[in-house]
Image 1 (cartoon, rainbow, N blue to C red):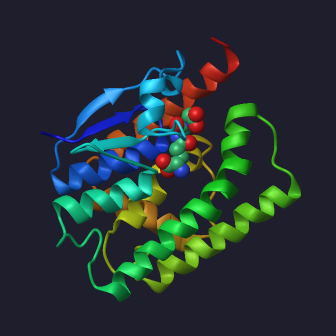
Image 2 (image 1 turned 90 degrees about the horizontal axis):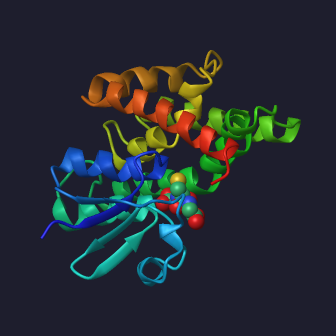
Length: 218
Ligand SMILES: N[C@@H](CCC(=O)N[C@@H](CS)C(=O)NCC(=O)O)C(=O)O
């Protein structure tokens, strides 16, 4: 039986899982959760994921949540030899390092600056802007050090997670002139991933819909 993915197509971290499943050719049964009607807070869903977040994957009775953990699980379980998540401990450590940096630093820096600007139309504070530019400098250095990708000299789940979570960069058409390696990374991924353009328009539309939802309370 195909693993079940609880998701919203508008949600950036859900896209990480969709990208990985697509590239690994893993079929998923998608269940769209109606977050507006608080489907994620219903007792049955809380039993699967007490953090009530999407994406949540259920496979063989096991529930996995947190998009990066799901990406790692899909590779481990369905494609252990995939270069998207290399098995050698040293190479895998580099991917894990970037995934952790994405979750702990890049994600919050982007959310507190550009995503909030898109949502609320307010300019980030000096401190928030510095957190963003510091993180962009790290991002740029990672791409430079790895010859075009963030954690290896080829595409990995770390690139996919960063891409899925960077919709605000497209939405606000953020100028990446000071970060030439990040700029090239976006172009490289466009060539590398066949569904990149569909993803980009879906990400911008998704963000627009979330912004409208924030404006019109349920
Ligand atoms: N770090 C988590 C973030 C998941 C997350 O916050 N998802 C949002 C939708 S984009 C959500 O489920 N929000 C509802 C809630 O937290 O109650 C991941 O990567 O999976």
